[in-house]
Length: 175
Ligand SMILES: CC(C)(COP(=O)(O)OP(=O)(O)OC[C@H]1O[C@@H](n2cnc3c(N)ncnc32)[C@H](O)[C@@H]1OP(=O)(O)O)[C@@H](O)C(=O)NCCC(=O)NCCS
Image (cartoon, rainbow, N blue to C red; front, side, top):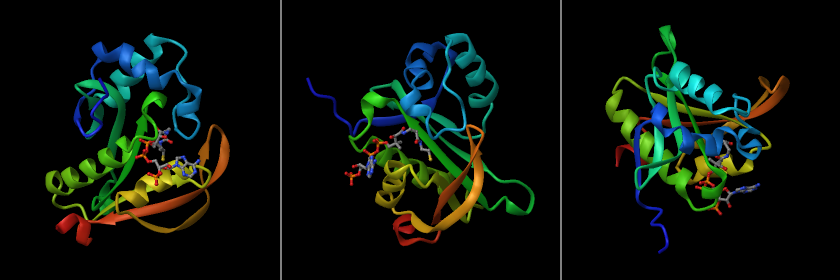
C-alpha cells in the first residue's frame, strides 16, 4: 500500500529511535548542507541526540505513521533578539521530493507563532547551492530577502547564503 504523505506528525526524538535517525545522520547526501558531519557510528549519533537534540527548546522528529524520517528545529535568539528564531530541517533521502518538508515547515511555522507568541520573525538561512531547500521555503510562504555573502562556514568553507523570513503578521500566518 502506498504511504499517505499527508500523515505527518511531530514528536520528541528519543534515543530509542537510533535505527531511524541513523538513516539521515549517516547519509552523506543528507549532510552536505548541514552543520553536522555525517555520523559513522550509531553511538556518536546517539551522543549528539542526547547532547544537542533532546535538550533543545524546539527540536522535533518529523514522523510518518510515528516513524521518525527527519527532524525540524526552531532555535530562539537571545537577549534583544529574542523576537526572532531560526528554522532548520532535515529529511532522510528516501523521503525527498514528496512534499514532506514543505508540509513540515508549514506545520512548524503555524505551531511556533502560537507556542511563542512574542515571536515577530522566523528566519531560515540556506546555502545558495541548496536549491531544494530554498524551494521548500518559497512553497511554505517565506519571503526571500537576499544573499548574505560568506555568511557562515560549512564543513570549514565560507558560504554565501540566502536568507528567508516569515513574520507573525504575514497573511499566510494570520489567516
Ligand atoms: C531540503 C529538503 C528538506 C527538502 O525536502 P523535500 O521533502 O524533498 O522537499 P519538498 O518535496 O517539500 O520540496 C522540494 C522542492 O524543491 C525542488 N528541488 C529539489 N531539488 C532541487 C534542485 N536541485 N533544484 C531546484 N529545485 C529542486 C523540488 O522539485 C520541490 O519543488 P516542487 O514541489 O516545486 O517540484 C531535503 O532535501 C533534505 O533534507 N536535504 C538535506 C538537509 C538540508 O539541506 N536541509 C536544509 C538545510 S537549510
